[in-house]
Image: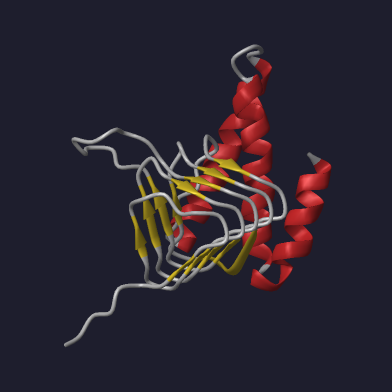
Length: 165
């Protein structure tokens, strides 16, 4: 876990101290979430992690629950401002996520319920939406403002749809 925290600090220090603090708290909360079922002692540590996470979520306007699986070396280029990650989502190692990104489940849909599984080295541009039980292949690029509802092949570059006024 200390290696993950070290990588979070190295990759996100330019995004700000609060972003790094949020990620460190996420790493601790994630570990404690797994262990609290087997030992009641961990509840004592888990409760402050929840309060810190909720407070920083209000400050950033983001949601990154401890149940989300986030790999190592993840980079939030512009901090966590407006970032929403579903608790069911999985994000691979070395991903870069910009601001106002939604990686969400399609809860409430009539289709198969689920959340994205994002491969290693994926770049998700500002304002992109990745929704539903889809797989995003390794080293893909999802452009700013793109809405993704279907699987993405490894190495594919997705551009947003053009809109005209």
